Length: 365
Ligand code: ATP
Image (tube, rainbow, N blue to C red; front, side, top):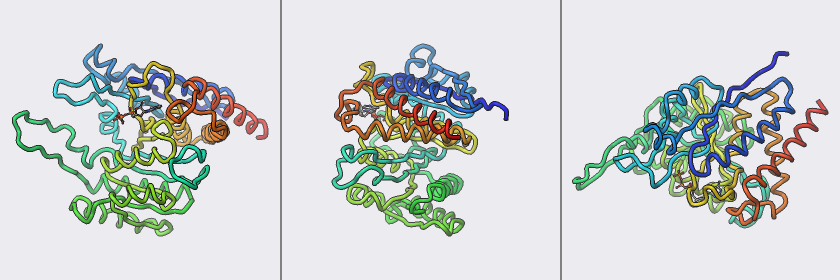
């Protein structure tokens, strides 16, 4: 069999982005040496606020072109609250990337690894396990380019739902529920009792649901969802929602399993994908070596699954099993989760466990 090389663009970005990215690339390189005829070619680019201050462009054309041609993109975090465009908005090239690469589906798995990490009572490892799919190219974020007139007496943003946008993200959610094979349920999170855009979203969701007769489909209002997530997160398998609702609910959901440091994500398009933690650049802890690398590492495991090669899928499994093993010791935690481990100690522990698990599996094969 011939060698398969995956070309992976690496965008560390700003704040804690490069810190968690360096650890993740090191872990992937260690796993690579235990894979059979599969290799990774990492292609690093300097993007984000640092790049904006140097060149005036946070996402240079060469970086964007590399993202277009590669197999997958790993992104740390971009943006810093104190560096803004002249119109006052934060520098957020990750949003440009989403729009320009057509990354319509923000897939955010929420999984509890240890009972100590949830504020909810009575939930153990694996007992909180659902996926939130956030529409990522339109919704209320469609108005983000509008400029505020400083003399205005009112301001308006449009919530845009298109047939194409709604159809493709709903289909992605149903396919995911089928692939997960758990409860096989997709919940549309909407506000169809108030907004006509949401009535439209629901109509399209119902049409898509008809092509997935093996999957249960239901609708839950977004406000009720906030309550149900805290009361009974087990009622959800896959949920799909518009951009802003998804932005808010994914932070709430991350809080159920240990916080932003535990929440990975994949921004999926028809022919491109960017994998990044759900958290931002966390400037308050940047440069201290204490950021939790787990969200970034789990995002890289999502990438390995998405590459759909039996060897990379095996590596993704080893990462998750290695992480489960590390977190089974309640003292193995970074500061955000009440522990004392540094970024590199946590990543190193996961790396050692994942490499051991992968090499023992490869030996059996
Ligand atoms: P954005 O809007 O860009 O998503 P945000 O304003 O939601 O960013 P984050 O950068 O995600 O903010 O940080 C929110 C809080 O969570 C901060 O206090 C930060 O220190 C903490 N935090 C985020 N990610 C991590 C991490 N990986 N490890 C430890 N703490 C984190």
